Image (cartoon, rainbow, N blue to C red):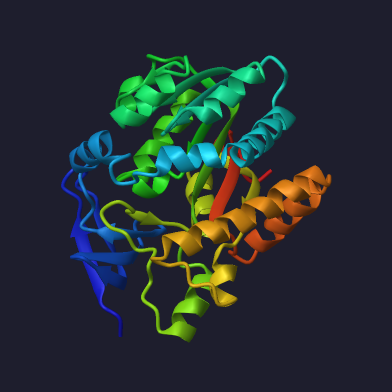
Length: 316
C-alpha cells in the first residue's frame, strides 16, 4: 500500500495530505486530496519563491532572451492566435488585459498593436527591465492580494506557465477572480506533466520522471484537475486545448532530455510544422487536433480559457 503523507503549510495553516507519487531532492510529490491536484511537499514559502524569481530568472536560463528572439516569428503567431481567441468571446470595447508573469513583455507588445490596453506583472528584475524598455507598463513586484482595488479590473487575465510555480495557486485564482470584470476571461497555461506519453517513455526506457523540478515546479496539473480547480472557484471553462506533444520525439527515438542541441532541433521541427500549417491556411485543423489530443490528456502544455461567472452559471 502506498504511503499517505500529511503536511501543514506554515503560511496558511492548511493541511495537505495524499499518496506519495514520487520523491526528488528532499521533496515528495503527492496527489493532494485537499487541493485536487499533485504538488510537492514541503511547499516553498512565498518569500522563498519571490527571492528566487526576483534574482534568478535569466541567470538560470542564459540563452532565454537570445532564443526568444530567434523564435520571434513563431511566438508572434502564437500570440496572435490568443488575441483572436479573446476577441472572439469579447465585445469590441473590452480590450484591457493583465499578463501575470509577463517575462520579456512581447505578448503584451503584440496586444498593443491590436489596440489592447495592457499591464504586465513580472517579479524578475531583469525580465521586467527588458519589458519596460519596450515602453510597456510593468509592475516589477510579486502578484498578490495587494493589487485588488489598486489596478482596476480587466477583461482578460493571462498566465502563461506561472501557476505551476506558485505555492498557493488556489489563493492566486481567487485574486484573479476579483480582478476580472463580470464575464471576463482567464487564460491559463501550465505544463502537462504526468501525461500518458511521458509515462510510456519512462516505462519503456526505465527513465526517471525528468519533469519533477522542485522547488521551481511546485504544482503538477492534468486537464481534468485544472478544469475542476477553476470550476470550483466560479469559472466556466470555455475551451481546453493542448500544445504540440513534444514527447512524441522521445517515443520516435530522439531523446532530447539533457541534450540541449537535440532538444532545440526538436523544438525547431515543431515550430516549422506550426508555421507552415499557418501559412497553408490549416490553423483550424491544427487547433482541432490539439483539442482532440487534450481529451486524452496529451499535449506538452495545458491551455484553458475560462470565463468568470456566478456559481449557478457554471453548469449552464
